[in-house]
Image 1 (tube, each protein chain N blue to C red):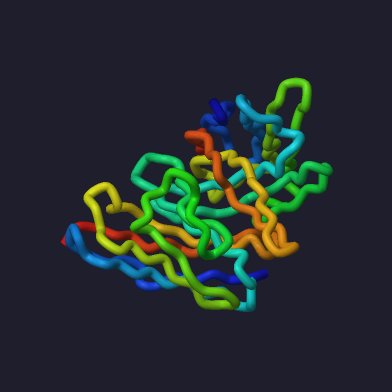
Image 2 (cartoon, rainbow over the protein chains, first blue to last red):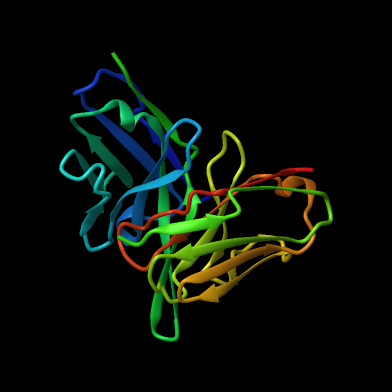
Length: 124
Length: 107
């Protein structure tokens, strides 16, 4: 069964750090694009970061320079290292597989598998 | 960055109604547009990718259309399990932003 399970969330003080993990089963993390998406309480979805199968990484402006996406191929696990945390980083964090489909020479990307999320609360 | 907008922000509908949600991109994104459904306390679920392709296992009452900057998600006959929030997302370029969402509730 294809599955993603996040862990590592919790309560952290402003300025602190946290590392989120996303363990995959049923597919290989390193062969896929993988993303993090977050949702602040009562708010909409916010795209956070993506890592391509080739290793390139991209970030939302709101987290650039503070968050780092990475993966451990031996553990088939995706990570999000979050530093210099702020109150506005409080959210449920989801990891997702970025599936790719090609049609007429174009490649389309979409998040077809999601974890259940892990909650990060930044507060003193 | 490409900005995504949705309308309406919320709507009330009855079971059996035809529902249409609109998503607009701030610049052309060809067909790089996905639709997700989210229920309270749950992870989002992919409904439509590449503007009009139905994800496997998603009921055929859901359909998507559009290209360029204007897109539509249509639910042909609303069912009780369809009451949820719907988000569009562009995958044309990073950051792959989402629209603000459209909440569909019971009239």
